[in-house]
Length: 229
Ligand SMILES: O=C(CO)[C@H](O)[C@H](O)COP(=O)(O)O
Ligand SMILES: [Fe+2]
Image (tube, rainbow, N blue to C red; front, side):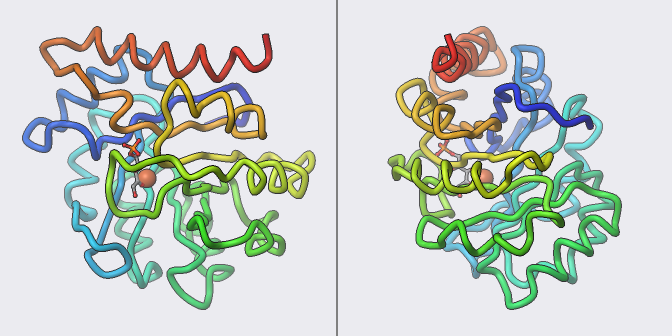
């Protein structure tokens, strides 16, 4: 997994057909997804439950790009090895999930994965100021985590501040929540390069109509890249 700052679209399979994950993953990748975003929720850190490491391991053979696992769980540390074994490429933990995010990021890298740190909407950019050399990705939540299909919360000032803090370090800024062709240009202009989108990618499509996924991905990408045109 090499570093670049081109716009990457990461569909969240939270909006996929839960009875058909393998085919859904293959469809979004065939239709242009750059990464596959996998939302792990524990019914404790967030008020919703999805799946755990056994399911993530079952997704792995279907993912040919980058498997980007977003942990919305607390605690994190007891499960890091299980997600490494499941084949996560990027493992992101929330800074709010416990008192020792520094240790968590070290452990994620130590287990051979790229380490991400996620920030809830109420958490300032400064929460990662002393973590930037331990982090490969900062995930800026633009919804309160737990559910797909929520309304975008404007975090552009936080994104711009993070881009300034990161300087020339090889750290991605990922945006998660409410990304669509209207909001993508706002976050791209502020400095984001990885755009997670669940409902805006899967809306109107299915494994039998995958071209809709392709159209949705192209619209988000064009809107984000249009910022630089
Ligand atoms: O982490 C998440 C929610 O906690 C999801 O990745 C996110 O909500 C994507 O869904 P949508 O694009 O529909 O907002
Ligand atoms: Fe997510």
